[in-house]
Length: 145
Image (cartoon, rainbow, N blue to C red; front, top):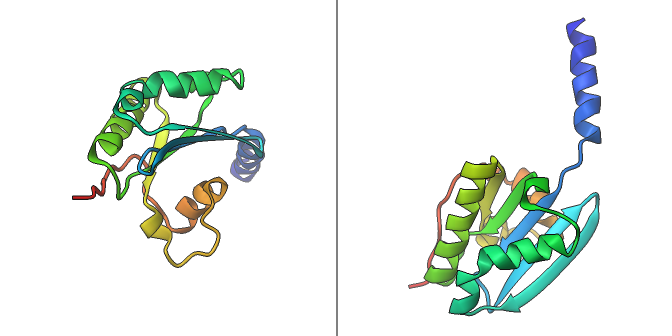
């Protein structure tokens, strides 16, 4: 009976939708991407102080454009730097709030974590985080001084 239960759980997990949100504010543009059932959508915004302050609105508008809400997201991947102190601080705070309020797991990655890899595209970030065992719900920002 236990074996059957485990097999049933495995089948159920494979059929569960995994909606992923990737957030990167460390570069010259704010970059957002969703991966929904292997469909990829992304958007960029000017990386300014005003947009840092509106980041939650920008994220919600981006999700709404795909008929999604933050509660539809299962995992968030956020670039922890190196980069701008204000951008990293704001984005990490927002993601941490999503985790506390909505129980959405997040993974803080740095492109430096994957320096030995060839395919470091945004859509590959979730696979790279799995491959390099990036820890869930751990914040360790890298700021440019």
